Each structure stands twice: as C-alpha cells, then as structure tokens.
Image (cartoon, rainbow, N blue to C red; front, top):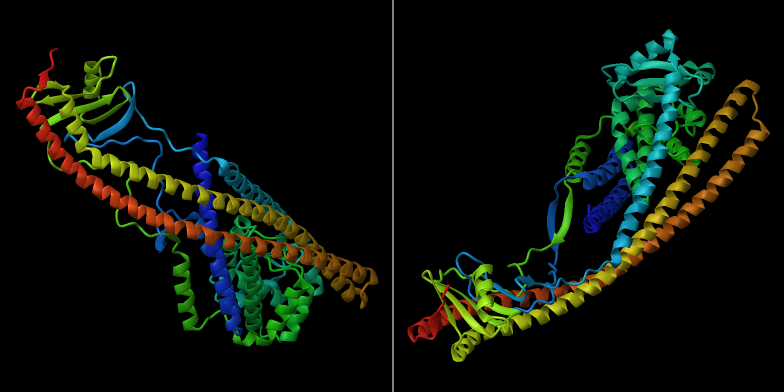
Length: 597
C-alpha cells in the first residue's frame, strides 16, 4: 500500500471515528435529558436507554452503509491547476483533446499536494489504536481473572440452595436454571457464561449469610441471567473500549451498569418478597464488592456513591419491574430502530457537476473530418487521435510551423495558408477566453481549499490532544478500578470480622478512609481531565465556524464554474460549425494540399 493510500485510509477512518463521536455525544445527552425529565422511570428502562447509547456507537463504527442526510452546503473541489486549455469539437471516436504537449504525451501539471496533515492524521489514528490496545489488554486481563475464578470453582452441594434457585428461577420466568458453583476466590456472587450460564457464590459468604440473604443474592444473579445481561453487557463494554477517550460514552456505560444493577435489585426484592432494609444490609456486604471488570458486562461502579444510589432506589423498588409498561416497550423499540440506522450528515448534491478541467463536452453531432490544428510543437487543438497528432508534428518538421492536418473520407490534407489557420484559431477564441476564466476561478477555489486545509490541520491537532487526554483518562480509570477492588475486598473483610467478633477493626477503618481519600483524589483528577476535554471540544466548535465561512464562497465559485462549463459547451458547438465551413472552403479553393505517403 502506497503512502497516499495509507493516508486516504487514515483520513477515512478518522472521519468515521469523528462522526460516531459527535453522534454518540448527542445520544448520550438525549438519554441524560430523558432520565432527568422522568426521574421515576423504571431502572430497567433507564438501563435500556443507556445501553442504546453504546449500541449507537458500535453500529455507527461498524455499519457498512450509511443513511445520508444532505443537511450541509455542497463544497466544490478546486480544478487541477497548471493546464493550458484550447478546446475544439470532438470526433465521434475520440474525446476532445486540448493540451500542451511534450513530445507525444500530454503534459498536465498536477496541483501541489498538501501533505502537512498526513502526519497529524496518522498520529491521531495511531494514538487511538494505542489506547484501544491498552483497553483491550485490560479487558483480557479481567477475562483471564474471571476464567480463573470459574475454573477453580466447585459444584455447590447444598440441596436447599438448589431448591431455592429453582423456585426463584420460576418466579423470574427462567426456562433453564443456571448451574450453581462455589468459589474460594470470588469477591461476590457472579453470573458468568454466555452459552452455559453459571452462578458462582463465595464460600465465605455462604457460611456467614442467613438463608434469606442467600436467596436474595441468588435472585439478583438470576435476574442478570433472565435479563440477558451476560450477552447485552458486551455492547457497552466494547463501546467503552473503543471510545475510551469519550467522557460521555464512558458516563453512559457507567450509568447503564448502575441502572442494570438497580433493575436486578428490584427484581430480586420482588422475587423474594424481602423488605428493602433487609436487602440494604446485603448491599452493604456485596454492593461495593463486584467482580473484576467483567466478561461481557462492565460491573457497576464500585464507588460508595453508587452504593448509596442503589440503596436509595430500594424505596421505589415496588414501582420497578421486569415487565415494563407497554408504552415504555414501544418507545424503547422505536429508539432501538433509530439507533440501528447509521446516519451521516453530508453536503447537498450540486445541480450539475462542476468541470474540473476547462474542456468542452463532446457535442452530439457527428463530424465528417478529423483534424489537428498545430500551433507549435508543444501546443495544439485537435479532434482526433494521438496518431493524427504525431502525423501533424511530422508534417510540421523540426521548426514546428503552424499547420492544419485534416483526414477526410480516407484522404489526408495539410493546410498551411496563414489566413485559413488564423480563421480556424479565431473560431476557438471564445473558448480560450472561457478557459482563462475557468483557470482564474480554479486558482480562487484552490486558495480557499488551502485555507480550509489550514483549519483542518488545527482541528486534527486538537483531535490529537483529545486522543492523548483520552488515553490519560483511560489510565486513570484503571487506577480507580484497582482502588475500587481494594475497597470491595476491605468491605468484605470488615463484614466478616463484624459477624465473627461483633465489632469492626480500627485498622480496617483506617485503610478504608485512606482508600476513599485516594479515590476522591482520582475523581478530582478525572474531573480536571473532563474539563480539559470539554475545553478542547469548545475550541473544535469554534473552528467549525470559519470552515462554514469558506464553504459558502466555495459553493458560489462552483456555480460560476458550472455556468462557464455550459457556455463552453455552447461555444464548442458553434466553433464546430465554423471549422467545418473553413475546412470545406480550403479544400474547395485548393488550399488543402494532399499528403503524400
């Protein structure tokens, strides 16, 4: 793959990433507004709404086709520069060729490449790939930890718990009850496995929990299986990994995880008939001790604020249910359909394509003559083939004196009469003037294009800063997860000691306070990163305004170029008639000399 190909692929990938980034932000803000406007919305509905944010991001990134919304004005591409243009009517077998020549090949000087953005574009894309690799490594590490827990777990032999699981499964509507296993290393009850779900219970908890608490813990994990969280959780997990730099996507994934846990809490309360205060005590033991960031579903936040929210939700658990009201199901279904439609805001299509080179379109009339009007050895106007051009140059000789080479009815002529040549050249004069106007318009469009490129470079530089800041946020998130896990382990140890000794250890309390201080410091640092990311977003928004200002004059120049193209076509037809008449007159007057082979 060439460097240009790599740059094109990088630009395309970055454009897709940027499109999905702003669309994901729009969806996240919409869901946030809905959840604030409807505070009593069931937890299961809130979880579904936040899940749709992750789905929208994945669909936008992976969808092969897009629904294009033509909401932007259509900018025109500047024409190729450095082309001297003479035009003539086209022969039916050949397109019109009007060019400068060097030997036998047409010389077209390409417009200079603007390669300043190549490094920036590739740098941004590589930064994203690096962050993605880091996220993937963290996810694989968590998966390995869960797999180790599952491998070391042993079948549960308590028949009472098996009977309780069967009864709770029927109550929740499960057709198949997951296998129950027990583990020495699980920090809390876990639901694992996509094809063969299993529920793993901590052995220490089984020894300390009352039968009612054991049933509530079982009901919570069975609710995860009933809701399909083991499968559905992959959507926000992958979205968070792919858009690690996006604060709103990360927030959406956290809100999904928390709402999902609240929905399972409500389902467990309803299935067991327990009192909210009883379930609240269970959350104090397990609420901050979730599994390592998990296989298929990122765990709910381990921060104490999340635990407080879950406990507060228990007061309204009676209004939440796995059976959503019909209007909520219809609304979520409609939003899901919209989320599955990948959109792209594009420029409106122009009414007619703008000519790139100042070349007249081939007229529909059929010409009886093929000719080459040779101005010099490096410039010609022709309606014929390259072979005709070579013949004309050979007839002109080394001096390259002007002549007209004509092929008519199987016979060949050469015209050297100055008046006839001048008259033929005059027939193309309006087209040459139009070509000069087009060249000037092309220069203006190129200048605007360069200004747009400068703004684009600034936007790419801001994008690189956002990617770097996102990588820092991802690294900080990993540290917060580690501290959260330590807090969970410490909370479990405190609960065990409280049940054993009837009092809590001052050392445990001191360690927990220290971890909470570290967590708060990381929260403040994360908030600072979020403010910096928001500031970069504001700068990016400011740059979009000059880009729009360049687009409007570019569109006007495109319309002018289009009008010149129509005039060029009309003059081409008129010049065709004049040239044919001049050639007929030259043959009739004997000014056309037969070519001898």
